[in-house]
Every structure is written in structure tokens, then in C-alpha cells.
Length: 256
Image 1 (tube, rainbow, N blue to C red):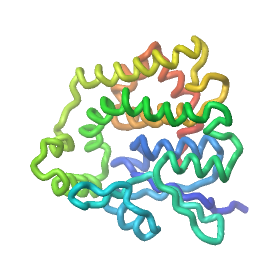
Image 2: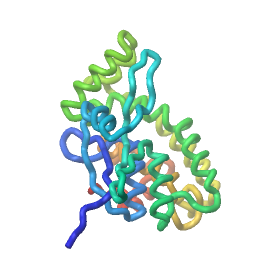
Image 3: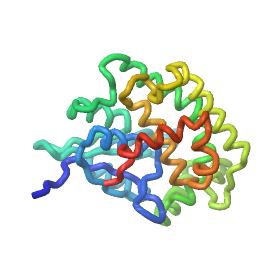
């Protein structure tokens, strides 16, 4: 007799299928999969995120200068105990899961600080280039309810700011923007190559860590939002390093 999973992952669906696309929710999913934790996914379009998280007792991720709260995914609900435990933010989720389910840790006992430093470094050298091209691509990934909600929210938050235009469906990604993203990934690869030519994982050695799952999460976002670009260009970047990582991460990318 099968038992119902006691971990619920809240994620954002793409337009055509229940396929994750957001790198931040992928960060939580890859950890769950790598640690072989049984879980189920509850899909939330953007209009449903705030009321659902409020009902579960979550606090907003941020509050903008005009006082508007921002509720964001991922979130994990653990219903295994007497009282449900809600954890938000991918880093908090990884820490919680490693503490409760210590098998197959994503934070190594030695070199733990590297994991935190890596995410900061990744966000600095890859993040800005990634989000610059992902914002227009996201329009084609979002379902209809999410599109209308995001447009309304950004119009209210940003009013006349030009950033609203980034979400227009006709927005295109220039070759220059892809080259900028490639430069960020190549810079990252140059750091990782210091581990040696046969070392694929960030921390070296034979076992992946959360740092590798961060990279895979962004690659997964590109694969969903820009599959042709992935096949034609991205997988070949940095001497094929990212395609090799993609191949070994197949079991981390299962969707339950």
C-alpha cells in the first residue's frame, strides 16, 4: 500500500504543461530529488501564490518601497508532524531538508562555507545576464492567468518605469544578450576549471552539492524557456561543461 507524501512542494507551472521553469523553484526540487525524498507538487499560477502562502502563515519575501508585499515561491510544506511546517526560500528549504533528512547531504560537512559563497558569486557573475534575457522569455512560458496577473502587478509596482516593457510578449532576445550570458557562464567555468580537468562538480570530488544544483536549476530554466537555444548553443558553452552536468543531473530533475 502506497502512502501519501508528507512533503508538498509549491511550484509555478509553465503554459503548456506542468513543467517547472523558474530557477528558484528548481533549486528546491533538485534538492528533494537528489535526497530521494518523497514529495508531491502543488502548482500555483501567480494569482494564487499570495493567498495560498498567506493562508499557510507565510510572511512576504519582501515589501517594496510603496508598501506592496511580495510573496514568492518556492515553498515546502512538511505535514509529517503534529503541526505543519512551512519553509520558504530555496536556501532555507535546502537547510531544512538536510537537517531533517541527513542522508545524501547537499551541504558537505567540510567546506560548507563554499556553498554560501558560491551562490553569491553565481548571482553576481551570471544572475544579471540571465534575468535580463529571462524576463522577456518568461512571458512565453507563463500560463494565461499568470500573464495577466504579472502584467497588472508590474504596472502597479513600476507604473511608468521602462522595466514594464520587459514583459511584453513581442520582446526579443538579442544575440548580444546571449553573448553576455555566455560570458558569465564562461567566467564561472574558468573558476571551476581550477579544480582540475576531470572535476565536474563545484566542490570537487565525486559527489554533487547544492552549488551544482543551483547551476542545473538555471540550465533547466533555459531548456524550458529557450529549448532551441539550449540545443544549438548553450549546451556547447564552456567546452561542453554544462551539457555534461545536465546529463549527470537527470535524476535531480524528475517532476512529481
